[in-house]
Each structure stands twice: as structure tokens, then as C-alpha cells.
Length: 433
Image 1: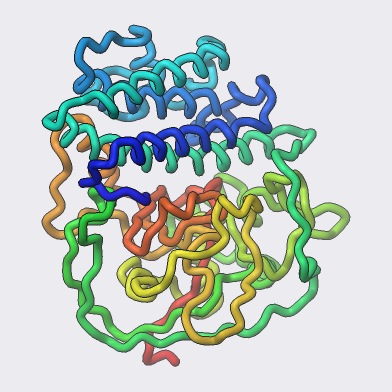
Image 2 (image 1 turned 120 degrees about the horizontal axis):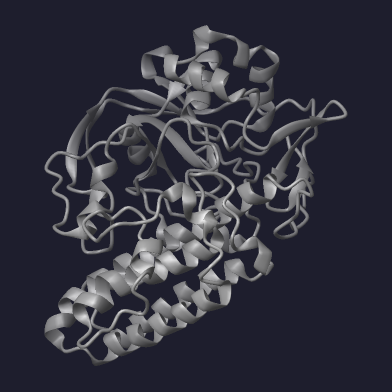
């Protein structure tokens, strides 16, 4: 975010609030009212729920405790739009969010307007004492809303993929170099080697970070190599054609069971039409570009592919070391493509595609850093209680806001997750070079 947690510029922070909130509504603008209530699976949420939940967050954690004389907008909204904050109160089951035909979309937009008006008053009229608590909570709320902006896009994509009409959310802009078609051979992998050494991992300084990115601490790494670019669709097809989904020796036990139970035979959204691979995108069904990064693969698939290729995945500390001094530039949501692009960096120096395009699975379980202490109260449930049975992803995706991502950012999902823009970067121990 462009403002630091200690910033006293209230007008600038209010402008940023309005910009982020407006971006959420811009994401929803291409939809028809019938699209807003669809929940295509338990892990996804209806669009109108995201719109309401992000507003509930500001009402619950800023207006209710910090705005003098605050009166709740609706007595049942906390039950309907609380996500997982047990200390705040009861909530509707996640899988049942799509059963709510009411409140209507119009009523939820009215709720957003009501929250925005009171947030503006809170920002501009609060005294200096409460401001010291309001400001960091507001910055957290904006980062929270940016997370939901990405979830909006991934959830809309999944919902549209379940519609036999395969509707398009937007139109893909033409690529100057054109697509790489089936049968094309990808460029050979180039590697960057990192020597062994003691490094620092985690966030430090005054800029915003989530609590799970801290404290900064030391990690010793053995020497390793990382692929300069992400794994491509063409390379992943070779894994499929070589029986990758039929070879249990490549898979973790839980992954093999998930693949068999779910009938996985390719990444999510892939299917063959007249003998050629195509996949669902936010622009509808499209032929697969052999050169673009493979995405919508689970941790289990990423790990199995790496084993098949004779390599492994990076740990999150290895990834952070590689990204620590690199600018946060890449194919983010602001470009409007909403789809991974082929690697165009031919410099041969630093790692390419570290940021944007796809979230990169790491081999690191999502656990607490040494010395981690969650915040008190309901906000302490934001990240800490999920530090079990999940794996870390790094780097952001084509659906992430660029201002939301940094080298220390830790995303996390269960290993069977496939509906996020998640992909693969290969690695190996340095002595294997």
C-alpha cells in the first residue's frame, strides 16, 4: 500500500480507501445480477457475499468499536457475513452462502454505501487518540479487501466454468507475438544458482505486512538452483502424455488419493476438444498456449510434476531469498489480462516471472515463524489459526493487485486447492547441477 501504518495524512488515506473500495465494484461491473448469487463450490463464495463481507469487516473492526454512537446496520448481517471469526460470533456455514437470495444485490450495495459514509466520518473526524488505533486497522481492512478482489475473480471464473454456456467475463487483448501452438517445444530451462549461507526471512520496517510475515528471523540455506522461468503448459502436457496422472510412484500418498477420488487427469479447467487441449479462462474457452505458465494445479500436482521432471519445488525461504532484491513488477490485475502470459525475459540474469502470472507453490508447510504472536481479539484469527495442513505460495498472480504483493508475502492454501492461479517453478539442490 502507498501509505505507511503510521501515516497521519487522513485525506490521502481516505482517498486510498475510496480507490480500493471502488476497484471492488469495478470488478463486479461486467456481471449481471443473476451472477451475484452463485456459489459453485464450498471453497468459493457468491459475489454479493464478498461485497457484503468486506463491508462487514470495516463495520465490525472499526465502526462498532471505534465510532462513537455507532448503531449496527442490520442485526443479522454479522451472522450472514462473518467469515471465520469465532470470537465475533456465530456465522452461516461457508457452504451455505449461496443459499441466501436475500439480502438482494441492491440492498448489499446500499450497505456498502452506508459503511463508506460512516468510514469517511470516522477517518476525518476522530480525535488523535482513537486515530492511532483506527489507522492501522483501516490499512489492514484495505489489504483484506484486496485479497477479496482476487477471490472475486477466481470465484467468478469457477462459477462461469460450471455453466454449460461457458460465458466470458471479459475479452482477452490480442498478443503481439501470438500464441504458441500445440506441439511446439519450449525453450530449455536456464538456472540460477544460490550458494549456501545464512539469510534473513520475513518482513521488517514500517511498511504494512500481515502478522504471518513476521518476525524477521535467520534461516540457513544449503546451496540450491532455481529455474529462471515458470513451468509451461507444453511441459506439463508432456507429464500428462507420459502417464503422470496414472503413476503412483510420482505422487504423495494423500495426493494420489485426492487425484483418484476427484478423477484428476489434467489441471483444473482443461479439457480436450477434437483432440486438442483447451481451457476455461475469464475470457471463456480458449486454446491452450503451449508457452504460457501452467496454472490451476494443486500442490500435489506441482510436487508430482517436479518429481517426474527430476527436480523439486523451492522452499519458501529459498523463494524469498531469490526475490528479496527484485522489483515487484509483472503481470498483475492492473494489466487487465487476467491470465498468465509466456515468459518474455530473455536477459538470462535474474529469475523471471517471480511476481504476477501465477502463485508459486513452495514445499513449505504454512507454520508460524519463530516468535510469532497473533494479535489479541478477533483480528488475531486472521492468519494464525490456519497454520496447519496448508502449504505456502509466493509471488502473486495475474489476479493480484500489484500494490498488495511484496517479497515477504505468504499466501497459503490446502494442498488439494486448484481454483486459484497457482503454478510451478522447478528447483534442485546445487550439487545436482
